[in-house]
Image (cartoon, rainbow, N blue to C red; front, side):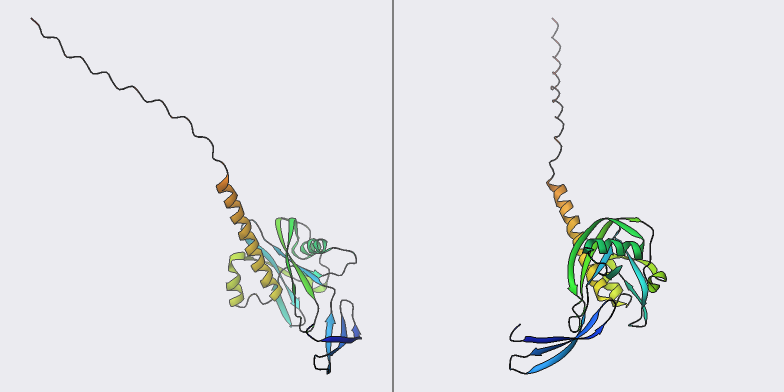
Length: 217
């Protein structure tokens, strides 16, 4: 790591979902320094896009910032042995009351690498149909469901309605993926062989000119 060497890692706090550790590093010049970091099991976020281009988001209280936040359905990877796609499907049903026919991994992001190793996998959910929701926490029991247009991401960020960075990244990724799929579909359609044209009808023969009358006499 460009001359940086981790010397030790000491537990500071052990919580239900994450822990705090004190890391001691040696720098390239031989000095040492400490950093306290949050160890996190990871999370998933799901962008559920309907056929008409609308997206279902949820607004729930986030006590760390003291207010409700509009965000994609998301959750911590807190079930042992559960893969990321299964976690995404579970969170989508729990929070948004939706089931997806298709889940596509769009990418993963570090949420705030300055102090935590939390990494969130972002999924696009399509082929949506309603199902029974099953809130897993107090905040989820009182969340509200809202719908936004996928084409309005810039406006929603600019007016302050969207402030959650993972959701913003997910919406842009979903819009790009959806646009690429539409473009591929149009390209395939343009390359499809056209049906043979019907044979043209034969030309009618030109009329035979009338013979002039024969002179009498």
